[in-house]
Image (cartoon, rainbow, N blue to C red):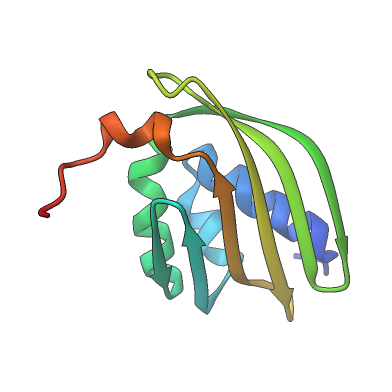
Length: 123
């Protein structure tokens, strides 16, 4: 694979997991990648993939609006388009890329549309 800039790596990672191509998504992740979002956190590439596998089942597509970045930090502003009651969810993802791999992802979106789809928690 030829070297790619940080923005193209982040976009490829988002497109891979949201289309169900978990092998490609995993190949773009550092082994120690961290994820933080409104529905949870993960540490490690395998944990990240396990986390997005369930989420990806609800995703019908992604409409990217803007990709921008500086150095190793990339922001993707997009809509997650679901095939369920959550509908279209405006989202921003902050990706950090080092040595050609995603080392951090932070997702920002309103999680309330997903609450009815989540398993109950013990209080």
